[in-house]
Amino acid sequence: MLVLSRKVGEAIKLSDDIEITVLAVDHLRVRLGIRAPRHINVRRTELDDSVGAANREAAVVADPAVTNGILTKAASEKKKQE
Image 1 (cartoon, helix red, strand yellow):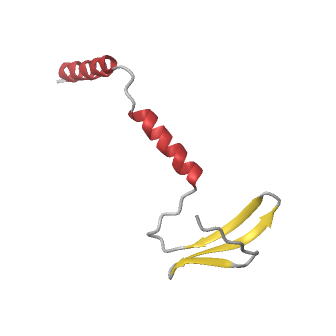
Image 2 (cartoon, rainbow, N blue to C red; image 1 turned 30 degrees about the vertical axis):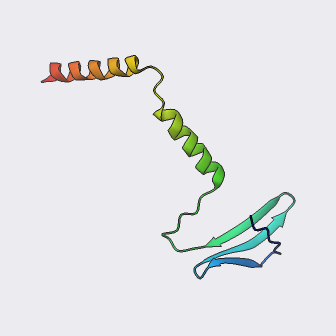
């Protein structure tokens, strides 16, 4: 990990088209401005982590028999409607 010190108003360029500027420093908070093309995804890691955890939780099937029962019930209800 590269660690740099910057003052308010100073910036870091990651490439020709991505720039991070320190906007403000207040107690334990640092406000950053990120200038990047629209096709570059900029996400906060805590949101990325929570979405990933929610996706993993949703993908877990506790009991395959329960899932099979739900699918069987849905199929039989569909046949009744036909």
